[in-house]
Length: 357
Image (cartoon, rainbow, N blue to C red):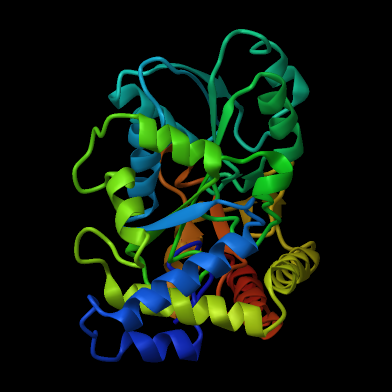
């Protein structure tokens, strides 16, 4: 199968090979070295300020979204959430579950966050800002410079879900004053799903240290303590952590984070330039490099996903809920090439000839 989904994505041969190897015992100096080297590279790629740290959480990105809310926020906080799609709404649900005081900025499908959207919340005592920087369900990339200026002006904690945009779009923790960054193994890292990662600057670390624990398994404070020696409190997804380590070394070896982001940008541009004659509408007015959201003008979107999967051996990414029959998405993450997109575009054109597009 050729996979253009937005996670899990196509993995490199090096990563796939690790997935087929025997999983080693992990309470060793060798495994601790892997963990600590991965932390250093991860923080380097995020342009994290001095004194930042990270943890590995065995669970999907949502596990770390919850862990950050539970460990980083309290009922003294007043939280502002960007709710522009499925994943922004997930932050809303998590914050609501913990009975925190919050407001959500509810955006129309495919629309960017604007100064006008933020203006009504200026100077209103909000203490924390939560955003899925790339709202993967709609393919909208929010303006981190705009958000950063707002948060600095209002002295707010900035929590960024970068699960889809880490390695595909620029993220600079130090420049933009980002306190928490969340990402996952199965997106642009191109590894198997099961590990999420949290990076924290000194402000975030102080928050976690001062707040009482609300979780047992996903307690960030406990995870930070064990990470001092390159370990985790409980058995992690050892094989996936080994894959992540190999992938981070691969990125560093191939030119670093800027080269990886540029690769994703070029793939996205190549795909978008070559579908202009197809009966498609790109639905985001603020595109990221990670994904292209597409509304097929003449047919049901989910039917395109099904035919490509069943008859062409190609996965694109369907949407759920009310967007299921309106939108599908094409990812630009993982081990893909321009030739991969040539194959997909050829399949689209064949569907058009068959009257299925």
